[in-house]
Length: 187
Image (cartoon, rainbow, N blue to C red; front, top):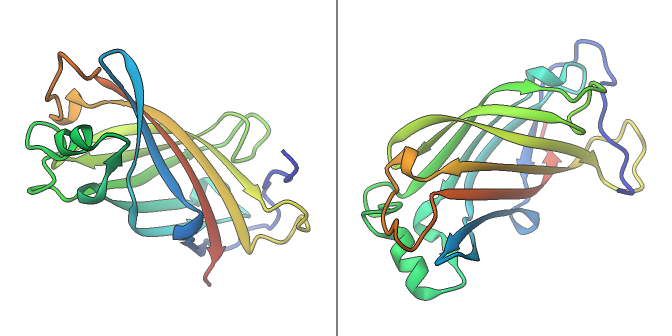
């Protein structure tokens, strides 16, 4: 990647709030339908993100996704996704993720093996979820210019672990997540 990786640069700096750019953010998921990969998107409703460049493990994120606005490429799959036996969006219109711990990569950065542990709440059930993480400055910016950042997260979850087990004869249990987000300093 052309962008340099974000590394700790300031001693004991306070966490800085960032706002999510909804136009440059994608929360995608992939699932197997009758053995064939299918893709979907879920919009972000709200995000509270704080990054501490001087002590990256103190960074934190609280994200709310709009489950009721989730979409797949197939109308029947989208309707099944929102049904009571899967996401049950009539009763649980939101999905929440709250970070609990940041693990830096071997080089002390939020990339190259970094992970974010958190609690995912889906259908009113909260379970731990670990996401692989990478945080980058925008291409062409100075090493200390942290006004705009790119975040890439990825992970997997068992939908059955959250009670979203409908259509097991058609849809595999594992769901893959791929999140790309652009953040802007707000403080």
